[in-house]
Length: 360
Image 1: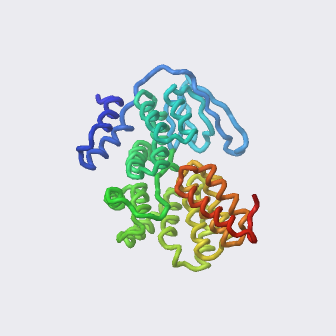
Image 2: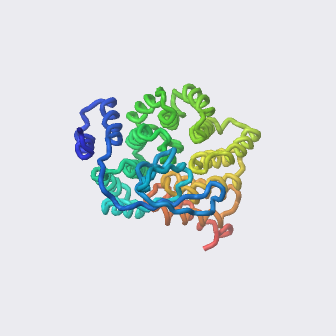
Image 3: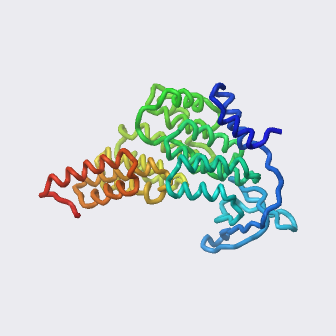
């Protein structure tokens, strides 16, 4: 049997294989059987079905945790709990995983990625492997490696059809040119039978010659049974069309977004905020844009752009004190972002206009 370390070594070998072969290896990465090992007892904290504020603790050995359920060996048999009821799991984590988590918390994503990869190599529990792979996807997203992030997320989705870690799906909401290799891969994703692959492809192709096909595929997905897929398909459609809609459509989007699952709200709120700014509703735009860095700070590139665009919206609303605070927040929280220097430029412009000076 091919082991995890061997699979990872293959993945890190020189890239001489075709795309299909690489995809197979990525699927293999999280598709291997876990080895049975002795481990300490896990503590699982659950919400009560009829009282979300209440917390109950159950103990045992977690056998699996996926998008549908948590399976717990209590010693006297197996118990199953709906995934949405699970608030927290206190388990035994490897030193390598803890080191990776610390690097991630310090926003050293390239270094954290290496450590998570190392942790996956030695982790025998499949449900923990998925957790680590999801963290790898976040690292790749936050370093804007969308192709690798997409391939790894699709491998994760194949291993867990319920996709417990769905919020890490690496969709692209930002405008900009798509690199040729990513565009080619996105065309493959768009033609796939997988809903999550179509979402990935659509997010990168909406401003290309594929736009008509993108909108057709998204329209079909907007009626998907999975509320997360349906919501993201709608929001990606908005992202491609907001410049040409009227106020009635914007109001409908505002109503729709209230019913979207909270866990996937970053992209939809970003798109709605940009749409409102485009249609000269700057204060409302800033409110939606600011939901991204406040409620979804883990998406670092999107949070940085949302902060900057919220600042520009507040400038349009002639609220320079508020815009100044956002630009300074951007500089403090995202110093490596190219937008930090643009924020500095905006602050310098403010300083040149003393009659409209902002708070210091």
